Structure formats: structure tokens, C-alpha cells
Length: 195
Length: 190
Figure (tube, rainbow over the protein chains, first blue to last red):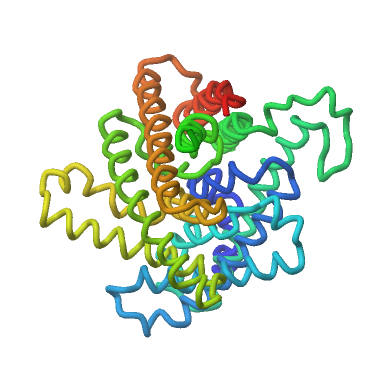
């Protein structure tokens, strides 16, 4: 039951994007389409899960004073792995995510979970925590990406729903990212109040 | 002329916050008062210029000659983290008043993605050292411009009658969206 809670809290109750407002840069930057949001979310989920496991395993070896730099090195290692794998096997996704792949290193969610959870819990709980938080993040990015793609170009995952001419271009561009996320958070806040 | 183009493009057209989505965390986090926004801008400008120079030299003098460019992400983030600590220590000794003003913001800067983003962008755009410094400084000014403007609007926003569900973050995001819309007016200048 407790382990299930470690996993599931990342989706709704403590969702990183919608309630904690962490990791805003990739959330706004890559969600111009649903597929980009999903790709970025899964890449972050992988880094988060792996770094949580490793940090939980080596937490007793790291002196307390240098723990933040050590965490950053672990995280940066997995980010480099993701970067190289993606460049090799998914070059088009790598192109469209661009700068935001190396920037997973400075995503507050990853370091935040390392510091708040993995440095205090065992490897299995940390893995579930990382997986839940990461997939919750991927879910948030996919939802936002779907909204923006649908409103902006009339497509969902590249499938045309209505002709592109009727789309509101602004939602694919920068201002639409802020506005769409603002309304999405307002909607979720209101749902939580009534629930 | 080239430098003018870099400056205008970094401040207005490709504004780091409103167009590139880097540094959103401080943009939303420390924009409740104009005075803190100005302090944050000072700290970011300071660190961004120094970090860009150091990472540029590391890339050209160490990573490229030894063919280990794939270590870019790891080495850059470590350099930036170490640099922020160093700046903090030096500032504390050399200029206590400046440390008083910027001190609280410095630890936050390590995880500011704008710093790492600019360092990587400088390498990607193949700038020389002078261009890199100009680019970093004007990007920081663009960050400050967006941050201070946004803080000014948010101070006014506190007095407004906002629908209950939109209070707090949602309205701030919508305002940021409108600000980004205004900045889109600059596109096409360069």
C-alpha cells in the first residue's frame, strides 16, 4: 500500500507541473506538439528513475557536505546517456527538442527528488518515486502538448481533426504556451476544490 | 554592426524568457516585487557573463583538443556550480554591500537553466570570445527587462479584482503570455 502511494502520488496529488510548479522551462518550451511533450517527458522520467536508484544506493558513501555536487554528477551522467541514445536512434525528436535535452540536468524536479526523497529512502521506494514523478511529468507535458497542438494546428499526435486553416496559430507559438498552461492550472485548482 | 545585431536579437527578438523559455523558475518565483527582481537580474548578469567566458575557454582549450566534447553537459554544470560558490566567497570578502544585495539569489542561480542554456548556445552558434561576452551580457539584460516588467505588472495585479479560480499562478501565466505576445511584435526587426 505504502509502495503504491510512493508511485501514484506523482500523478495527481503531488504532480510536479500542476501543483508544485517545478520544471517549468521544458514544460513550456517543448510542448508545441503532443509527441514532443511525450518524448521530453519520457526522457526526463528515465533520468529521474535511474538517478533516484543510483543516489539511493550510494547515499551512505557520499559525505554530507558535497552531496549536491555529487547528485549533479550522477544526474548529468544519465542525461548524457539519454542525449547520446536519442541522437543515435531518434534523430528527428532530438532535433526538435534541441537544447532542452542537456537542460534536463538543471530540471528542478530531478534534483528536488534526489534531495527530498532518494537521499532518505531505499532503492526500491526511490525507483517507484522516480517512476511515478517522471510519468506524472510526462503525462502533464503530453496533456499540455495535446491541447496546444489541437488548438493551434487542429491535429492530435499528427492526426488531423480539423483543417489547419482554422487553427489559432498563437497556441503553437510562445505566448500560447503561457496562456494554455495558466488556464490548465486554473482548471485543475478548481477541480481539486470541488473534489 | 554584427554586435548590434547580436545585442538587439538577444534582448528583444529572441528574449531568453519570453521566447526561448529559459529561466522560467526565477521569472515566476522572484517576480512579486520590483526590488527583488532587480537584485536577481544583477546576480544573473554577473554569473552569466563569467560562466560563459569560463565554459567557452574550457570548451575550446580542453574539450575540443582532447576530443571529449560529449562531456560538455557534465563539465559545464560542474563549472557553473563551482563558479557560483566561488563568486559567493569572493563577493563576501571583497564587497560586503554587493554580497548583501545579491547573496540570497546566488545559490538559486546554479539551477537556473538560462545560465547553462546560454553557455551551450554560445558553443552551438560558433561565436568567438568577444561575441560570446556580448551575447551573454545582452541575454542577461533581456532577462532583466522581462523580469522587471513582469514584476511591475504583478505589483499592480495584487490590487485588481481577479476571478477566484485564476488567483496566483494561473493569472501570472496568462499575464506572461500577453507579455510574450507583446514581445512578438519585435520579431522581424533583425
